[in-house]
Image (tube, rainbow, N blue to C red; front, side):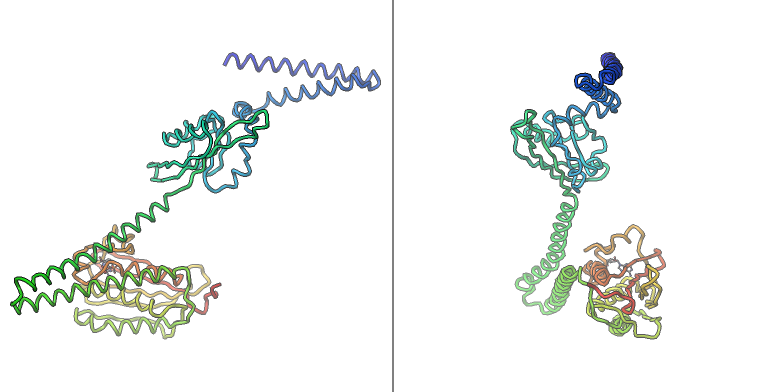
Length: 427
Ligand code: ADP
């Protein structure tokens, strides 16, 4: 601290001396009729004074970083760093930070120039990798993970950056590029979970069918009553497997075309009416009445008829299955100005008056295989994929799907879709 103050005051003296010299040499040059010697002396001292002044007025942070930056000039092309979307940090041969971009600053808020990288990044793997690259050159790839504030995973590419060996300040630094693997990891987890869930869902009925076959081949070989009963159960289990495979195939087909908006005009009201007619016998078996409230049709939207039939089949069937105790299902179709205020929309609501759904389940109902009560869903022939299929189809039609429920009073499933007359043709 004391030494620094001394150095600064010494620089102050140098500035004042240089300014006095400028005045003296300048006056001498003027008196000497602009002689070459005095003019050159005045110019030299002016430059010296300006340089001394400039150095003295630099902020402390820049003054600390200045020696690093001068030596590492080509290691810190700021405009280039700023243009990169991934976090990038550049360090010199002593691991002092000489450059970073905004993404790196956001990822490591305590990162500062001219300070060691280890102050901001406490990952032994990255720091060891960096040390090795600074020592031997070349490149390394290491992983770096954070658990707080949220779990994130990065792959860090560490590469040596050399200034020109021909230049007298030629030396080695390193660039660290962080690639965010969080989304890829989450997708991978989802895929693994999906395969595990699908296999589990198939394995249970398959094990049951195999068990009954063995029983029929062995102890129950001559028992005709047992045979009839077991064959009935086997048929039900085989149907369950078939439903599951159908649902899995539909889901993958819809996902494959998720980015292509259907372009065929279809009458949504006709589709809803058709589905109510189809499911009325099933509802009657459960003593449920389905009612429809709708404007005079038709209501044209750009859609895929089979997929839309699937949407209302799933929603009305669920309402009958899970809301059976409410004894009625109301389907309402209405048009509205739309969320943007310009495009007109049609909204179809399927409401039941059964037990409803607790709020903690609502956000997860459209996840594949998510069920409030697994045994209840299985017993009712569910696969746990119905609402996931609904959500994907509605998204593909550029619509909106929402679920509301008050436990004890039933549930309402709303599908909003843009009407064809107001839809801009897709590119
Ligand atoms: P599932 O094949 O099990 O019916 P879905 O994806 O169609 O699968 O529905 C997911 C879960 O949402 C169901 O298992 C059920 O717990 C719940 N659910 C769906 N519709 C209703 C409803 N109308 N009332 C109460 N719960 C419902």
